[in-house]
Length: 463
Image (cartoon, rainbow, N blue to C red):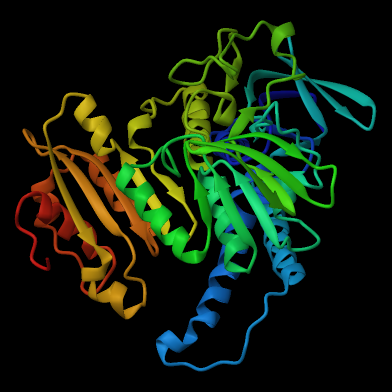
């Protein structure tokens, strides 16, 4: 293995491995450093295996409601161990796929913990042995990890984070989820669907607090139907694990309560992995726990770059990938456009799914826009009704003056597959009228986007 490279990337998540492939495509001699498994958290413990768990939960729900579709089946039972195993098998297969891509693109894989050093050097420690490599360009893509709340320490047994939540040996009878972002509500759905009594405690006024308020209220309504108990404007003050299970003290608007569960899942966000990777020694600037970069991910120290969860952008896999591509294209002398962080789709894969991009209605008004808002419920969609999925709606927001598409917010079955239309349309500066006049296929769930746009302009047909 060589010791000198054009590009060395520390971390092989969706930011790191994508950047490595693009760098190789552009003719740069590239190496990637990984201390655990290729693919990072996303492929091994995040995006991919959680979707496998969610699919198993969804299948179990289909079977339990088969009678709604005119089909009679015997009683179903969730084999929790088999569900977990399937998820791990999917993750392992994807990680092997990244390994194949590295070899295909002639990218050197360096196993171990990578640290940046002055002089455009990377030190890699593996089994106590340290090896030094040099590169013209070093990209930090070390990702993030679960945030630990100071008053709720994670012990990995009774108080767990997302990695343990997808590899528990035994299904808990009851579970308290702290936080209702994407991680929290996805695991809440998985466990509740398979029979666990789930409670959510959320500090903010609404669950999935980054979403449009109407989306949050709709998800809360659907989760309550599923049997999930929800406390908003609430904080978990402490968790007593001295007994057989957990006794959590939760401060709610109506007073302090005790919640007894087998397990507590701390899903209060993520923090950047920036400790012990040589940033201070190298002089790389930090701000609020993130690495400071310019629009092309160059840090304050020439030759050192950062992408993904360690920077200020949204902590999403597709953001990290886009940043990695832009970063290496700039390094290679290309002329990429800076990333538009106001046109990044956010997807939550609970059931019903949530997908959104751009301004919420509240944010658009606060930004000074006069808005036109249109909504179309899936209960009025022929495809949704036929599929037995009438829950949810599409909400679109346009600038009343120029027709600019300011935002879109969806909740319902398969909406994560629909949001890309909005992202592309906004990138092309498409107006509301152009969406209304673009023929959408019938019957499809995606018709709801056109119908919602039509509703914003008083032209909706099927309401």
